[in-house]
Amino acid sequence: MKICVLGAGALGSSIGGLLTEAGLEVFLVDTWKEHIAAMIHNGLRLREQGSERLIKVRATDDVRTLGAVDLVILLVKSFFTEQAIRSAKSVIGDETIVLSLQNGLGNEEIIAEAIGKGHVLGGVTHTGAVLLGPGQVLISRKGKLTYIGELDGMKTDRANEVSRLLSSAGIQTDVTENIYEKIWNKLLVNVAVSPLSAITGLPHGGMANVREVVGCAEAAVAEAMTVAGVAGVFLATEDPSQIWRLATEGLPADHKSSMLQDIEKGARTEIDFINGAVVKWGAKYGVPTPVNKTLVAGVKGIEYRQQNLKTSEPK
Image (cartoon, rainbow, N blue to C red; front, top):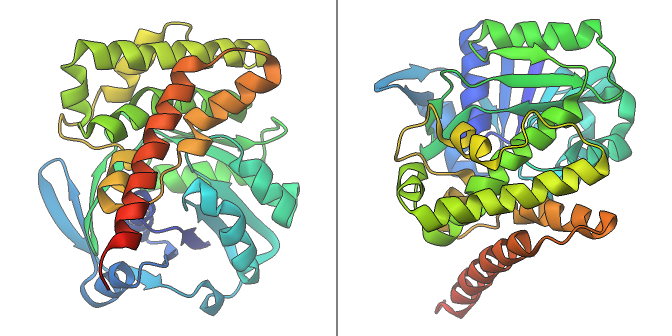
């Protein structure tokens, strides 16, 4: 199977590297030229549980050079989804599967509108990854599950095959008949940790040591759970504290959320597709979401400040 990982940042590079190690034909695609160049010339340096290894990967910053592929694993930031999938139409053949493992709500619908619902598999992964520098990533996958599924809830041969391939590379993957439930459950994890880590600058362990931070995280999750319930989404738990435990267990204390990593790089975050999605759905179903609104405002304020600092820097 020929695979394109579209969005080879921390998680995309990690998954692409593991699939390459498993003997699959994988191409890592990203617009960050320094990262791509480092992987082309030096390989991907993958750090995991205190050990480090070098994986020789195929990488490019031009998706148009690949031709049609069998599977696209989409891991670009959610606000780039539409642009990325439309720019990658050259790799989409008649039978190409596009699997989103992105954060947040709404990516599958954006992809389906661009290339047709029949190409799309929904997915969610709890695997964590941190980009340490060009060509260097840290992955945390022990005990972290990945779920994929058809948007209509059917169990298909193609979903089973993709699950088998991912599992063979050490990415433990199950096929589910209710992928939207899994997406919402992962959303709750991000609702809990992402904005507060971005605002406070604290890694997972640091947040856990501040009672007020944990309380705020659980309040944001409780709002999201209420929204999901009114919208008719089944959730695995009704206990916000359980979501906090799920978000932090198995990860090192110094693990940083992807949103904090974005803030530290001065990059745009996915807040609109995480807590912002809770606010949007809350408005749709008449559920107040003041905690999530406040967290969105906090992250947006930091983004605005950073952008102004960039534009005011002397040339």
